[in-house]
Structure formats: C-alpha cells, structure tokens
Length: 188
Image 1 (cartoon, rainbow, N blue to C red):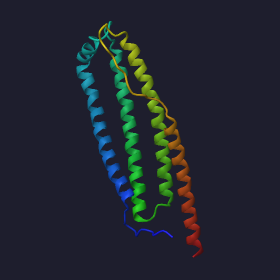
Image 2: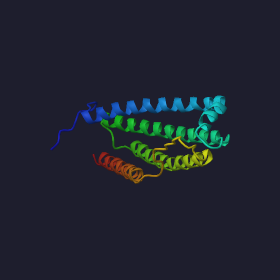
Image 3: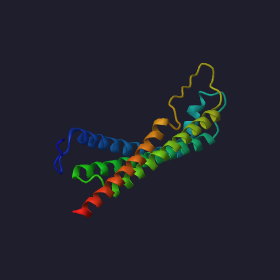
Image 4: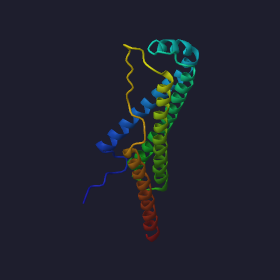
C-alpha cells in the first residue's frame, strides 16, 4: 500500500508544478502588458514603423499592414488571457490536491474549462498563421540584397487536440470520483 500524504503536505512534483505555474502566470501577465502597450505604439508611430519596414521591400507597404498587425496583437492578447485562465484553473486544481479534496465537481468544471480554453487557443493559433500570411502578402517582394526570415509555426497541433481530449476525459474522471465519494458518504 502507498502512504497517503497528510492534508496540507505537498510532494516535490506538486510543489514544482505550483512554482512553475507561478512563473508561467507572471510570464503571461508580462506578455499581456507588452501586447497591450504595443497597440498605442503602433497607432502613434505607425508611419515610422511602415517607413522602416518599407526600406526592405520593393514597394512601400500599405497602411493595411498596421491593421492586420494590430489584429495579430489582439489575437495574441486573447491567447494570453485564455492561457492565464488555464493557469489559474490548474493552480486551483493543485490547491485542492494539496487540501486533500481533489475529486470534486468543481475540479471537473475547472478541467472542462481548461479543455475548452486550450481548444480555443488552438483555433486562435490557426488564425495567427493566417494573419502572418496576410502580412507577408501585403508586404510584397523583398528588395535584392535584403533578407526576410519568417519563423515559427502557427496552426492547430495534434498534441494540442490530444491535450483537449485528455482534459475533457480527466474532467469526467473527476466527476465520477465525486460521484463515488458521494455514494460512499451516503452508505456510512
């Protein structure tokens, strides 16, 4: 038989997860602040940004590039908010484990919410890829001797979809655990 930790005790895995989630939470907050601040910068210095970017291209980029870039920033901000939501829910699940009561309906709801948030993030990541394609097409041809490198992949990933399914299944497991606990409490 395994030794069940006392209420309030935390093993190294849970403690590490809690610390990592705290770091990720701060990183998401920082990234969100940078994204929010970039929108007025783009509005105020848009023409200067276009002029600098335009030096690398055969034709001057149209003002539309700024609107599409602002849309990109807005979608990234939505992803950051959904990431914060997911991190917050996972922290609450970990807290319930630490308190000794993980199998409850609230955690089932939290896991389902995390699954839905990650599913929406997957869709928004595909939107980011499309926005990058639009920006590249609006910028046009690069001047001879200039280099333009676009890196990163934006799209729906198989691992993301599997994570969504895992969270939804785990939510059902937590619901079933809560049902079993209720049945056990009723027989005592």
